[in-house]
Amino acid sequence: MLIVEQLLNALALAGLLFLVSAGLSLVFGILRVVNFAHGVFYMLGAYLGFTVVALTGWFWPALVIVPPVVGLVGAVLESSTLRFIYRRLPIYQLLLTFGLALILEESIRVLYGPTAKGVDPPPLLQGSIPLGAIVYPRYRLFLVVLGLVVGAAVWLFLKRTRTGLVIRAVAQNAEMADCLGADVARVRTLVFGAACALAGLGGVAAAPMTTAYLGMGIGVIVDAFVVVVIGGLGSIPGSMAGSLIVGAAQTWGAFYLPETAMVIMYAVMGVILIFRPWGLFGEEE
Amino acid sequence: MTRPRALALAAVVVLAVLPWVLVRYQLSILTDVLIFGLFALSLDLIMGYTGMVSFGHAAYFGLGAYGSALVLIHFGQPIPVALLAGALLAGVIAAPVGWFSTRATGIYFAMLTLAFAQLLYTVAYKWRDLTGGSDGIAGVPKTTLFWGGPSLASPRAFYFVVAGAVVLSLVLCRALTRSPFGRALQAIRENERRFVALGRDPRPFKLVVFVIAAVFAGLAGALFAPFRGFASPEVMFWVLSGQGLMMVITGGIGTLVGPIVGAMVFILVQEILSSYTEHWMIFTGAIFVLMVIFLPGGLVGTARRLASRA
Image (cartoon, rainbow over all chains, first blue to last red; front, side, top):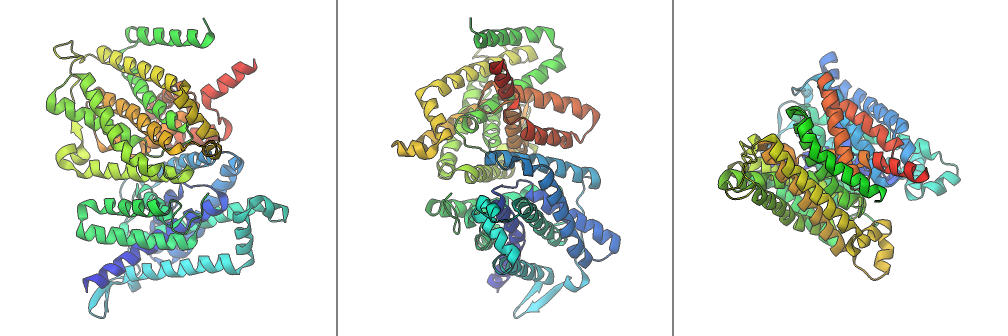
């Protein structure tokens, strides 16, 4: 029964990873920007989640309020800095987001201090639940479900709505979409904000499991980079596949070879890149 | 004498005179500037001249620092042996990492180098028996110049070793960028597809320059360990990789001298800000964001453009 338990652990971790990497991938697909600050938005989500829980005493409002707030912060930063340098080489955009990451990370340190902030899960999700032969923590099951629901929602939004159609058009050819009357600047801001909101949601969801702590941003961004490199930048199914692979590698690695769990993740990535240098679902640049 | 040559000579004279003018604290900052200047300079080789942006360059700085610290602590060899050991260790590890990473280009390359650097950081953090884990290796001695030679324990003596190593590296890197090999790198930067169309394979070039850059970064790290007296996982952390990128961009990408100027500006700004606030990172970040938006050529690049226009 150990195998079922670990499978669920891997899925819960994959759910969190997906919330973060989907936004990273989306921003790359549409803005052609690798957002180094993405992990910091995840961290911001966790800390804001702590604040909302501390103020209201409830977890659920945090899950609803925090993502839009984080998204708004992202949208404001995009339209006040990144917007001006889309014409430059991609590396300048990466470096700019690196500067933003420094500012945000240090601001959070100023506001919240250096100690980690714990967040209690809502009563409904506390404790464990019998699942056939095993007993499993409810909160992790919630993460599995959350990852699946958000994944489906993002995918349906992109494929089935008119806004999703415009976003995909901008991803394919921004100039052409512009000529056909799409407001490209607005689409970029919207997508950047939405991606940050997803990262914020991930942060709120992670907080009860990992607490909110400084440095959680860089930890998650490195994992998310590995996820999108495996899955292919700009692809939502790729993010999902990558999250599952990394979630599995980390879960089983941590169990069987605790000292070298990280190495396994990179080994898997290395093998995949030998055969598919652009990731499983990526397209050659 | 041409103007660049006169400037270079003046810079060497200033570097030679400064240790007799500066007080101890200032001299230690200057040594810092040179060490991190060398680190940024090595990053400029791959970033400015070949167009490969590494987000994990600190790993090689860190490997150099550990290599040199271990040699000095356990074997008490002269400093040049430690420098060689640090630089070699960085180069040896960079070879397989480069082999993997150069399979990808652009953003993928940046992410792969970051991932490998974090992996090396984790190894340094976990391998307590060798690296001392999070405590690192403390008490690294500044030994001698050669076997039975003069001691380098005084700040001034060690400064001259650092200055000598940095000037020599700058000269070597400059020669490298002007060699046929260096021209090929710049051709790859300008148009990799065309380079392939001309019948050349860019990957060996990229791999070799990646290893060379790692060797110079390792040399910088190998100087750092005896200078500060320790090596700890922080010296391979991603923050340092990012700071290296900042120095290159601030000083001027693809100029070699620029990154050293960038290191000077970065370290001085940090010194000044940190005496007012412990949260200097916010301001460094803000300055950096403004630099990226308004001064893409960096200080040296912009100065050169203005000079050539005048």
